[in-house]
Each structure stands twice: as C-alpha cells, then as structure tokens.
Amino acid sequence: MTTPTGVAGDVKDLTLAVPGQARIDWAAREMPVLRLIRERFAREQPLKGIRMSACLHITAETANLAATLKAGGADLVLCASNPLSTQDDVAAALVAHLGVPTYAIKGEDEETYYKHIRAALAHRPQMTMDDGCDLVSSLHKERPDLIPEVIAGLEETTTGVIRLRSMESNGVLRFPVLAVNESDTKHLFDNRYGTGQSAVDAIMRATNVLLAGKTFVVIGYGWCGRGVASRARGMGANVVVTEVDPVRGIEAAMDGFRVMPLVEAAPIGDLFITVTGDLNVIDRPHLEHMKDGALIANAGHFNDEINIPALEELATGGHRPTRPFVEAYSLDGGRTLFLLAEGRLVNLSAAEGHPASVMDMSFANQALGSEHMLRNASSLEPRVYTIPTEIDHEIARLKLQAMGIRIDTLTPEQKQYLAAWESGT
Image (cartoon, rainbow, N blue to C red; front, side, top):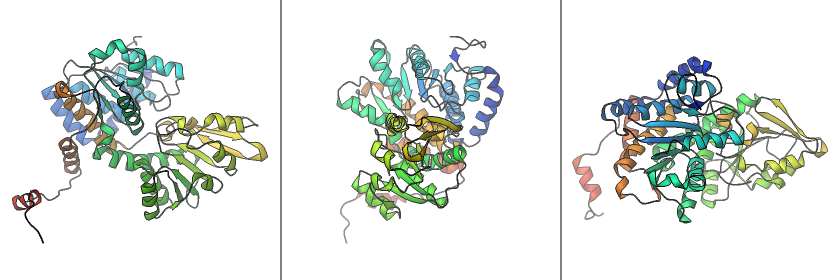
C-alpha cells in the first residue's frame, strides 16, 4: 500500500504528521548520544544500501533511531511491535516527513498487526531489528525463503532474547542475532530506570490513584522489576515483591521489600504489576483471592503474563471500560477487578513509554550494534551474541560527556598492577 506522500505504509492519519514531528524533535533534545552517532553515520555510511526491516514500538524515540539508520544509508521499513504502543502522530511523521515506510496504527487488531509484520518482511530484509522477536519468528515460520538474504538481526528486549535463545537451543535459528538487551547500557538503565519511571507513570495516568499507602505488588525482580519496585516505593507505596529465583528473592528482601509467594500477596495487594516475560504469572488462583478494586497491570512485552481468559471466565457479571485503558471485570460476590491496557505493555499502551534520555543509550546500542554485525558478518554463526564491551563502554562514555560528567582514568602503573599476578600481600 502507498500513502498519498508516495511513501509506502499504513498509518492512521497523515494530517497528524506536524505534531508528530514536534514530538520527535522534543525527544531528540534528550538523545545526544544518538545524535553524535547519526552525524558520524551520515559521513561514513556504514549501512549503505542495506535493506532493514524493524519491528519496534513506533514512538518519538524510535523515530530518532530511524533517522540515524537512514543517515547511515539503510533502506528502512518499520512496523509496530505491539498493537497498543504506536504513537499515531509519530507514525504519520515517519511517513510524511522522514520518508520511512511505516506500518503501525495504535489499537490495531491481531490480523492487522501480523499483516503489518508481513509487509515489513516483504521488504526482503538483509538485517532485522526486533522488539519481542515477532518479526524474526514470523520470518522463520512464514517466509523461510527470505532467510538466505538475511545477514544478521538485532533484538531489543528481554522477552525477545528469551525466544531467540529457545530458537538457538532448538537448532532452528538460521542467522546471527545480537541481543542488544544484554548490554549494560541497556538493561542497567532502560530496563531499570526507564521501565521503573514509565510503568508507574502509566498506572497513574490511567487510574489517577494515589500510590502512597497502597500495597503495590511487583511480580518479578529482574532489572525491570527492580526499577518498578524502587519507583513505587519512592511514591510512598508499600511494596511487596514476588519471585521464583531464590537469589533475586534475597536481593529484594535486602533491598528492603517484603517478599512472599504471590498467592499470599493476592489478598492484600491493591495494585499488581507483572515484569517477568513468562506465562500466566497472575493465574486463576491469584485472581480468585484478589480484593475488590485491585488494579492489574503488565510491564512485560506480551499480555501472556496475566491469564486474561481466566479473568474473563471469573467475570460472571461481564466487563466494561471505565476509563481509557481501564477495563472493569465484575466477579461473584460483588468484587470488581480492574485490568489496565488490556494486559499489554502498560507503559507504552497507557503512556508514552520510556524517557528519551534512557532510550538514547538503548538505541545507540541498536545503531552501533547493526554496524558491528555487518562488519563482522563473515565470522558469525547462527546464534545469539552479546554486544562487545568496547561498544557498551563507548556509549557510556558519550553519555557521560553529554551529561557534563567527567570520571577518572587509570594510570599506566594501575593498569600494569591490574594485569599482573605477581604482587601479593
């Protein structure tokens, strides 16, 4: 499909392009690392002529990544990685102002979502860029004929890396993929500070509830869970953490949170948020014991973390919208449970996603990671790789520079000492 601008794509309304561009420009002010990379890419053209299909959240921050990839010479097509995460004005600006074919409409149904992924695959990508692995899994299942043309891929998020490692262990992954999510400048900052702030922001926007004094149950204490728990405590909530990993359980306890099984937290929680990347972590037994008025949200990539079919079965009184992104489920005994954003990624569905300043580092990893994968393609096997430490450190160095922060450097004597084994007590 071709839009009136002559650029292929499927977006809600091209007349939204002007406010969309303003939003993109605003985000750019907080993305100095990506700007520096874009300036170099424009000079050196490391991605020149490479057909790239990217399945990402279509946000103002992603638009700045798209501009960087285009500056580097990439022939880019974008589609949404979540039905509710698209910013329609940004999608319009990508098509109308940046000339990037974009297939994304906020609220698109499942059929349209996968139609858009197929449109991105029709670009015959030489490189994929994914947020959740839907593009790569669809490529392997539906268009294996295109795989010989693929040089490499990149994956942005925890859920996608889990799926890719499963593909690798089952021997079905057919090209190398860089797990961008595993870099320190991604998971230590995007996952912790980005998810922490944006998830709490989305819950407050959707519900307008006061968090202070509420019992806030965080399900999963990975980097995202750490961030959400920390920010919820900062808002005055009484935070409970549930975990299946004993080390993370200890860590949560020593960080000052109450730790207990979810079945024990279910009757006391006012608000529940999942951040695990797993299936049915809020399940029927938990839903059966939640108190009247409990709010349920998900900050993991897929809505599988909440057993929504079980919630619908329990809702003998049906369900209805009560606010934008809030659905009320009426259960026996007069209880009502509230599901936020259809159980989808709440921070991007009910709010604007991560702050641009943390996405600056995440998307710097994507940009430099794509350059790295192309440069080293001949030596890479069909498996999941992590980003080299030197790239991670360069992104951190550029971020510090942009923040006006200086740090020390090792002296030659100190470097020699750290490299030697002879020195003792």
